[in-house]
Image 1 (cartoon, one colour):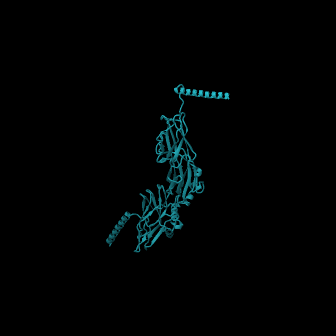
Image 2 (cartoon, one colour):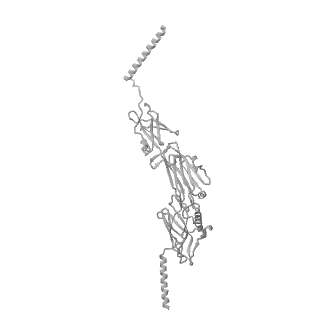
Image 3 (cartoon, one colour):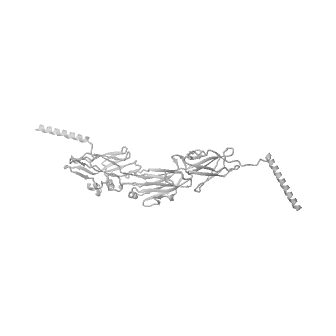
Length: 479
């Protein structure tokens, strides 16, 4: 009898040891089974991510199959009173996984996330996105899913609730929930900058002295209601050649002014519009359009395709509203201008200094250029179009040259200006022919044969005139 008992105990010990080894080798379930009838974990895949994003799962309701084969839930602590029972939670999960601003599910997720965050509850598990997705192995129940990012330069992630409760089968028992693939809830935060009367990406319709219209379009980020941080700042910085007309700045068609929604700091060199956290959280997804004019100055430039007069608009926001980190996506516009250059020469082809040409623009600006020792005349900061330059100062000893008419466009003005050594440009039309100032006719020099002829002719004319006068006087006396 003792021998049989000893043998039985030995077998039982071996069985328990084998069971312990098997348990140690099996994957650990996040929600530990509370009975032998509990089901295995389910795999939840979150898609639509950026590489390196962090996905965290917080247990809200732990599902279990009890000894009598009933599905039961144990609610997590620190839940809001409105969602601390399974019936309250199930009632708001009917809107599925698609993000819709202001739905019951989104409001519930935000409230639960804030409550758990305030209580310092740790995530049941986390995963890091590889590529565009991340996988979580979750025990049966309901989970709050939070995605955080430090590289989400154009998005804010929303909290989600995922249900992986056991599913009843035809045999009267339960199976694990099917694996779930969920596209992350997010809102994109982008900025679009346009320029010109038609609000396009670039323009070449403006000359120096013109006021150029600009528009910045964006939306207020849709932050979760429990966001620790909710930053939204619009900024705009022009390059050399543009000066913002501060009085022209409008937000959604209304003159920009400090108030409850935002504060603005603006100069000719740029502006910053900073929205308040209260306004941001109360107006998620609201469209914002900032319009203004900037004066085009003589500092406008075009050195290369990516080095042209313009400006950059940015929006600053928190891709992870639970940290202070911000990102600033932006968008650029360009104001393309053109130039024209020709060489002034004398009748012998030599460089001619001291000639001044003038162009009067439609906006009243008067542009002048005077040739130096190299003979070059040039005009810059001009819109596409046809112009006429008139010589208004003629060097001594020369006659005025004909007016110079020329047409500028992206197709014709592509060269460097030869008159500006050390500066590379790509927006000049270079005249192929020099402009000649003819020599002014001059009298022959004193003592030459020419002067003798002229003197003789003069004397002859005087003598003839004297004869005519004498005859007239004689005739008067005879009468």
